[in-house]
Image 1 (cartoon, rainbow, N blue to C red):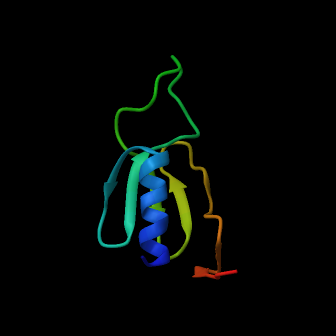
Image 2: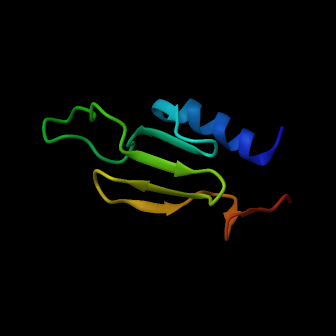
Length: 77
């Protein structure tokens, strides 16, 4: 299993409503923000680029790097 496939499988277990977007991206409901009433958003706004190793939420504007990716490269230890 490639590092990208492994990461995709892990994220699909952790995130709600994961769908593929293109060949190397995932979209899901953001795990970091909720609506004012405390409920989760209805549509996916959380985007993950598996090849670049980064994520961005179009709803709360959060962004960051994925663990294990330095400059988009996967380093095995």
